[in-house]
Image (cartoon, rainbow, N blue to C red; front, side):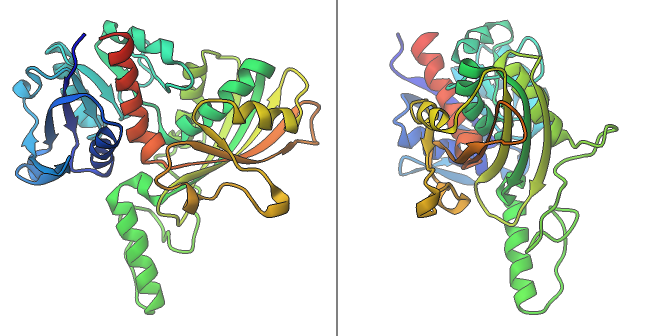
Length: 339
């Protein structure tokens, strides 16, 4: 077995790319060479890794020579072109974009949920990382589905502006500052003012009235859990929070379900921290979950409108577990079990 693996980080200057480099270092990933790749406009910039500066180079056909694993987070249009090139060069691609998620020949993986799916990478040499809002939800749903059987899910998301990249963070900062100084502000990253506002609109609207973000949650959840019978509806909302997505999830199950049992079940499940003590006002909040690896769950209570129902509140750092950490965890299992 190899002791060191050569890694390429594609989109290294972006928020997720920088988080990947940070997590590779934190988790002492067995790295040999690390190559930082990005678009032409970022060539020559530097990114930090293990106290050194990596110079960013441009994506080219020869970029993946001698690279074992490439962690992609550059945008779907770039992944569409360069991920297959990397895969053809013998590099295993873990892609953070939406480009390959619903490809039946590409595994869509959350390590706590469907780690065995990683073995299907050999078909195309590509593994897809799910949408950030899907990841934290399926981590919470998996133990419940395994024990009780899930019939239906109703989820409303409250998604941080960092989900739209650095432009989203800058826009919220600029608008808050402008409003406090009684000045006008521009909308660039979002279609309407995000400061002190909630936008029930993430990504493009489809003919069915749902946005692409909402339909990603529906379709990706079924693929990851391997169950097309689960009925799921989603409303995705952008909120004026910098980091961490929150979700209100209502679950209807086949078998009778009790809140106390669910708390115990989730607390014993991988990647989950339960914070659920209403008497002490103890529940997950976005501000406390930033920079944390786990999915945090609280407000677990019976849905009194149906026979077998439960409500819960789920929060996770969208840049870590929702993107970079999940990709690195996939890479860790890949080298442990397959390489």
